[in-house]
Image 1 (cartoon, rainbow, N blue to C red):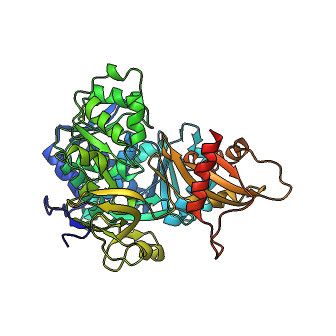
Image 2: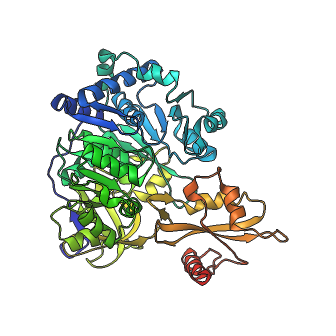
Image 3: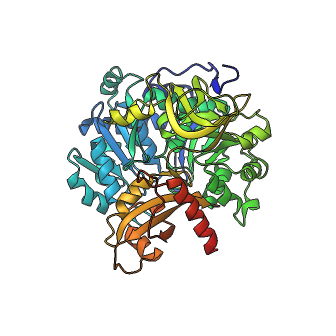
Length: 539
């Protein structure tokens, strides 16, 4: 298959055939006194011995609260030390962590809690303008399997986290667990309605974090600054699990992204690695006081989540002292990373591609219509197979079968080109998905919400180019006869507090008709082209 778009990644290093809990215990035994977790804003830090004790105390508290193997535990909070403890404590007892987006509002929260059957939610009281406690009061009565709501900083949290660890009970539970057991549910937007619940196992995410870290040449001496959100695989897998599988330190610079706080944390904690989506690096480089920060400890990091502009990558390498920075590509359903650039790759490939297949993974580019592998240099759909592919969508075999074929290949819906050396470029998307600053946004979900507006008779949502976020959301709507004029401000006010802020349309276009096919389907590609032309005319 030398002339076809197929590559198999290296077979070394060997996969970790264990659970997350067992891996953390092994790391703690080997690196007991090394820093494991630092929350800069909270002013708290743990070495590995202390982290393992804290995790096992919380794990015992969860067991005593009735959480058993396979039960779903939601965590709804920004990046803070408690999030990391919940991640490892649930894995310790075989519960399934359900990662909830901090930007959710009641409608989205209720859907996720109900669809995954969450038994307990551990949540911050509030974050920014969101009153989580009030939103949970609103949503919880409509979530039939939810039986326990725990607010951080409250007495109930203190009771759970302060339990005396029961090593005998935890060992008995651990003996029943398997590396292929589900350990995490991540909600990811698709093109058809509500988010899909990607179900990931210990083997999926532990190995993805470990192998991404191996390609970054992590050791116990590394300190990883993680400003990307924990509720994404970027934070909890490429960040946390990459760290704990190597004895490295997780550094939380702030609850939410703050460019200055991130660089302060790098400087104060002497971080060796920094993560971010391109917009984060752009914001950091744009700080007026950028040159005042000592970033000399940095050597590597990851830029991912959306297309990485070449010039931004060059500036990160040169001005942020990150010669080893890597571009990663993947999706939640693949734990997430499928391809990655290496530190010894030529600069042109490091800034112009998303790298090559990761260890123990296969990748190929196929004709979307016929499924045949295309020749190198020809565009097609990117597919991947291996340890990283999810078990499936939670309680949704039909949608699982739509993306994972009978041979185990995950069909990503992304258009790609593979060159003669196996490097991949992502050139577009088959799916009608908007990627805004690393957030995957389902147009259908927003469209369904816009249909609840009393003056809108029909609505479609498209992504349009944006210099800062990569893409922005535009609503293209038809109004009911005799409806008053609808302004963008009116629409944004209608959306505010009812859908996540990143889903609120940045632009509005009112039309009398949509471009249609002869069979009556909306031509989204043509609609997007018209939207771009419309915005150009407005300038």
